[in-house]
Figure 1 (cartoon, one colour):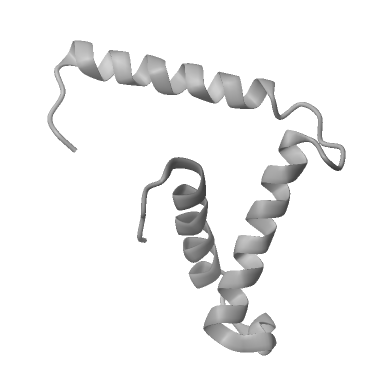
Figure 2 (cartoon, one colour):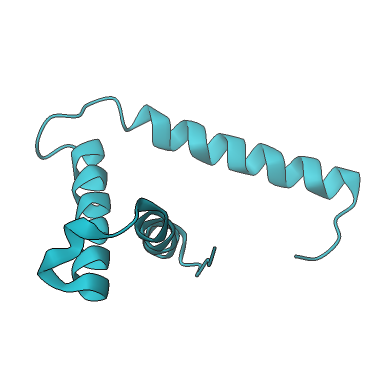
Length: 86
């Protein structure tokens, strides 16, 4: 990431804060078919896919750290279009 001035950093912080508030506002309803439920299902499936792709159907015997990192990477790609690694 490029070096930001204090003013630029504050602007980025404010934009992120506003974006998160917008997301939170739309995550209130958690019933099936809601926005929050859709996010939940996508995250759940990404974790399931990560386990199955890495370890096959016997993925229940793996450590959670690897799964969590992979799931977080998939989440960041899905939500923000960025690829992250542990």
